[in-house]
Length: 527
Image (cartoon, one colour):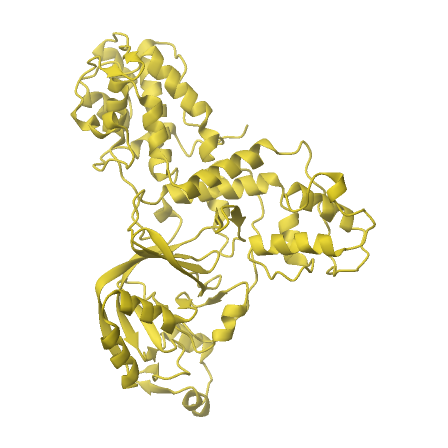
C-alpha cells in the first residue's frame, strides 16, 4: 500500500510540542495529563496498569534525537514509557487508522527495534505523530491557502499521552482525539464502505460525446447502468434493474436525477459531461474525497460556537445554528474559481441597510474598463475620489442589505440585485463575497432574535445607507466541504469547484486523480 511520510515522522510529532489546550471529549486521565510526573502504577478499568520495563536514562537520551520526543521524556524524568499492554493498544490503534482515512499515511513503527530504548522512543514518535494527525490534521491548512483564519485545535499531546500511558488508556485517548460528531462518523463509515468495496479492476471509462436524453438509444447505456448500480443509485438485484436494451429509460433517468442532486448538478435527468465526470469516478475516487473531507474536519474546533453561521462554499449553502440547533438553511452565491471565497472565521457585527458599494480597483479595471458615462449613470454609479461608487437602491450590487464582518479580507455576506441567480445549481459566480438568498428576510430574522427589529425597520425605511449594530455578534465560518451528511442523514458529494482537493489528497498519500470541477462563467460585476 502506498504511504505518505510527509517528510519524517519526527516532523509530524513535532507538531505536538508546545501546546497548552486539551482536546474536548478527552478521557478523565487524559484531561489531567499535565500533572503526571512518573510511571506510578494506577488502576484502570481492566485492572492494575502494567509498568514499562526499566531502561537506562542514558540509553533513552541517546535514542531520542528529535525535539518532540526529548520534550516528552523530559516531562517524565527520562523513564521508559511503553509497557506491553500500551504497545498493544498503540499497534491496534495504528492498524485501525483507516477509520479516519489515514491508512495511506506512515506514522512509523510501533514494533521492536534493535534495542529497548530505540523501541520505546519509536513508539513515542509514532504515537505523537498519529495523535497530532487525529487532533488537528496531518497538514497545516495555512500552508495550502493564502488566507485561512479558522482556529485550529492545539492540544497538549505530550501531556495527554503521558496521562494515558500512566492510566492505561492509550487506545481510548487516541480514539478521543478525532472529531466525535455525527457528521464525522458518517464520513468515516462511508469511507470504510468505499475503501473496502474497491473493485479488482477499474470500471471502463464512459466516453464523453453527445448528451443522452430519455428515449435515446446509445451504446453507453450498459456501462452507465453498471456505474449507477455500483454507486448505489440502482438496486444490485437484477429484477430491479431496467432491461439492457441500450435505451435511456425513465427509471434510469430517475437514478441520474438523484445522482445530480447529490453532486449539486442540475437535476434534469440528462446525461451530459457533468454526469459522466461523476460516473467515471470509481469507489476509490469517492474514498479519496471522503479522506480529504475528514482531514478538513480535523482542522476544526471540536466545540464550535453554539450560535453561528456556517457557509459551505463547495455546496454554496448557508446553515444558521442558534443555541446548537439548525434554525435556517438557504442558498448562497460564492466566489468563482480564481476569485475563491477564502476559508475564514469572522463575526457579523452589524447590519447595513441600503448599502452603497465602493467598487474595488480590481473589479473596476477588469469589469468596468471602457464603460462610458451612460453605463455608469444607468447603474447608479459615479466617481468619488478616484473610485467608482454605486449608490443605494435596488440596482446596487449589494442589494438592500449588507452583513458587515470583522475581517481584513473585505469579505462579507450581502443581498444582490439579481435574485434569479439563486435558481442556478452551480452558484460559484461572485468575486469572493457571499450573496444570500432572501437576504432581507434573513436580516429581519437576525434583528428580531437580537431585539433590534424596530431599529432595523427604521434604517430600512430611511432609504439611505444606515448601520445597525448587533448586540451579540454572530460568528461566521466560511468552510469548503465536498462531502457532508445531508438533511436525510446520507453522505452527499459535491464537485471540487476550486480544485483544492488534490493537494490534500497527495499529502494524505492517496494516488493522484482528476478532481471534478464545474466551469462557471462571468455573470455580473458584483463583489
